[in-house]
Length: 436
Ligand code: GDP
Ligand code: IMO
Ligand code: MG
Image (cartoon, rainbow, N blue to C red):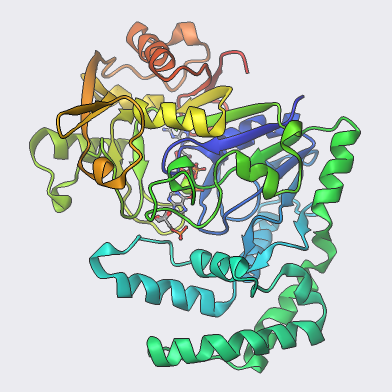
């Protein structure tokens, strides 16, 4: 089995957890390479439904070794809780490997995330307030605390002391928040170190050795292409490299080792938090009326579009081929998995955005300037639906209603990437393989 990067091709929540879980058994390692517990990946198998934030979704299989790579930011309290939750479900975490170089989310990162957002007012990003941005800020500023620092109490104390000299005045004087002592941080974090120590590994070396032996690796992206710090809708993005390229830096594996890049795309689009979203069908509370509001509400209710991490209602809209083509380019997608096709069974006709219009100009390619994107009006095609036909039990492409087959084939045509997997329900079994 060749090594693969699995990447969100929209604004996150495309169904990465489900597809990772679906294909993970074929790989020797499943690696998270960026992000942190801002991610919420759902894995459903039979009557078991698990929400994972830090653990790679391949954890369900004993043969696939789950790895948290150097590019991830780790909140150790969250990881310890997640491991306990999995163990209580009968899922062993004994094979987990955590990179010594991954950065640690500290309590002040979470405080500052919330405070930053508050100070931005209506321009807020709508972050998950998990401390992701402030932790990556410290990493880039070369002031971060890494997993390896947790295991030497002397070094850890020194690093916390140095950090607090800067953080405490910012917390108290700029934001009016409480401050921390070295002692209370040690009291909270050192017990985590004792629990996590057995899982520490030099993950880059481990993965490279495995690849030399012919083993295969699945890199599980979090968030999505349009939330990538470089290629997303900046500044309404997360603080890491979610795109396929991030798999190399976030795990310490050379890009030549990556054979396939599987983009996950919902059959429509959702977004959580602020920022431009051209095909959005606004909810009434966001100013949507008539057909727009009805479409948004229907996508949200039928698709159960509520955040796994924060419980927020996800903004919903029609499939956008402009961002799909952009994602194909910036990730080098070789294949696409199209998820939630079953949700579209609720509609008489289905719209697909093929290009944008702004100031009288047509954009077939993702516009470079945010000001254009903010004002982009989607140019839609309208396709006939398969309303009322339950497709959740379809096991082959041929079993799908003709219009559903045509919808999938049309998306392939206008996005230029083969759709190798079609998901028709949340369960592992509710999936149609088309050459993956
Ligand atoms: P991720 O963050 O990309 O892993 O996606 P989330 O787990 O946040 O959100 C995707 C949601 O859709 C989850 O609740 C999944 O169980 C569910 N899901 C995934 N694929 C399908 C599908 O084909 N049909 C339906 N109805 N639900 C799906
Ligand atoms: P998964 O992996 C959807 C969004 C937040 C916010 C922006 C920045 O489940 O697809 P952050 O807390 O990262 O600084 O927030 O990114 N965001 C996500 N949206 N799915 C996610 O993860 C997300 N992780 C972050 O809503 O707009
Ligand atoms: Mg999610």
